[in-house]
Length: 379
Image (cartoon, rainbow, N blue to C red; front, top):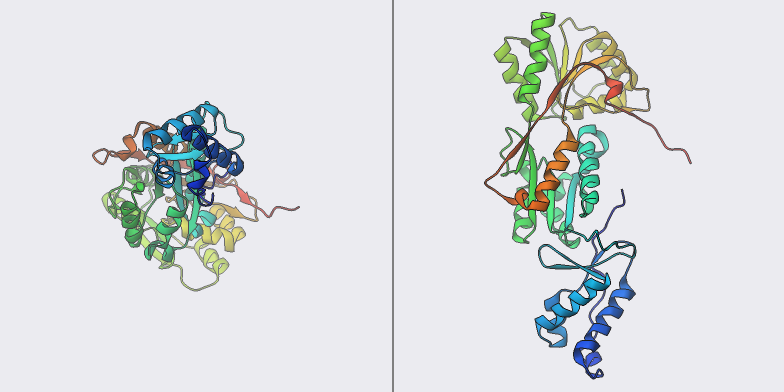
């Protein structure tokens, strides 16, 4: 999918004296603006001068500039975007597919690289936005950039109208407040149980986790399981959902904490553990093992019944095993389609409405059906 970078590097408008040489000011201004548009056209759309900016520079009525812009729209040079933004169309502009809005997609870089579920959401939402006439820009950030507000400043430089933020964390409050002050609307997608910010969309995993564990208990007489955790790789909401489900079903849990130790040795110990199953509540932790010791993780999947309740994982530089696992998955394509539909109808900005998406339990499925091997590209 092509990436559309929203830029505004057109340079200053010409001086007012450039208009004085024209006999008819409206025609003269049209020629000036048309020349600027043609000169600055690139492959991708760009933000053009606003109506008020042009009116102030050339000391003409706003209505005059608005009429000129309408004529340039008819020519296919400009498009108007919701929120009063004027867009200089790209060289391959199709009159039937004008840009609806510019959407910023902030993505935590470490999660995007290592967590398959996280990355899949952005693949789906970008594709759907592009197909429905939106321009998008991905903005990768580090945790500290969301904390100190520099992320919001970066988003502002792209002139985005809307930000779609997957799982905004508690310390990102400063960035969210700044975006609001800038007039940029934020559409949040969070898990149920994370009221950090008032999100418009929620993903609910509680029923899927309970379905998975009930199957373990009822069909396989599971009474005691091992939960793998780490203080450096956490998924607090999923961990709390798991704890409540285990308590409700009367399943005993043994916590096995990964510390600063060799990954292959830790996984080898898990292969020999004497419980009825192993659960990874954090996809970040499971992904870490898949990167550091893919063969060790594959051996674990063959030796034990394993559940990844925070989404599937990638396997780095190794063949994804066909060993059956239990997964909790989210249909991110459905989520993306719903959000984009609501953006078009403006229902995505209705604070009185909330949409919940149910995760699904996938029982005894080959991991190879949900994951892909990550291999270096040779040129």
